Image (cartoon, rainbow, N blue to C red; front, side, top):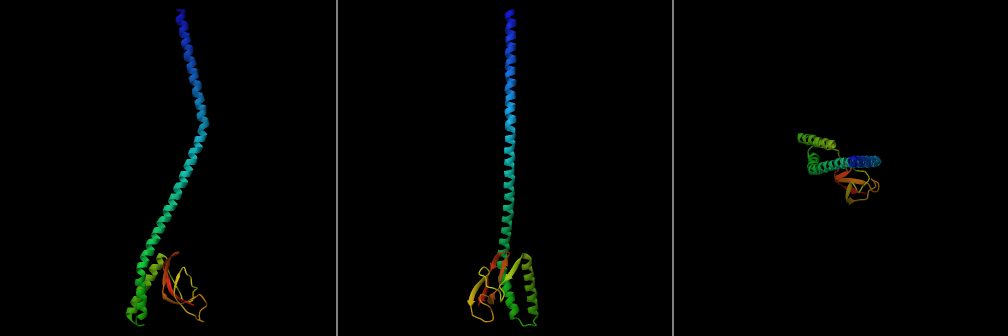
Length: 175
């Protein structure tokens, strides 16, 4: 019987020791977790900030691409209508001054000009302005005392631009 009591006490002591050891191990594990928790929190916060910045950059890139595609589509469409505008201007110039046909074509040409203006398209190439390679195409060169050196003396074909993009270069005669 004494042996049984001793064995029970030893078993209880071993159980208590293992429970104490387990508790100590759990405390150590919790302390390690507490030490690594701020580091993990900072890592997650840094990853979140980087992901948010990447997403913001993606949105900006997408918006710029959409605007670029829109401007390109408008420029292509305007380029298709420019020959029609040229024909109307030539018809206005050729028609007699008091002709009702001239008045009608003038009105249509004015509507075209207003529509182009609404789209942000501006005509380029005026007599007397300074010649600019990025806007004009020099078809002829002449010497004249009437205009200063390097200026446009005559416009053969009006040019158009949409914002900074040239849709059609103006064909001009340069002094």
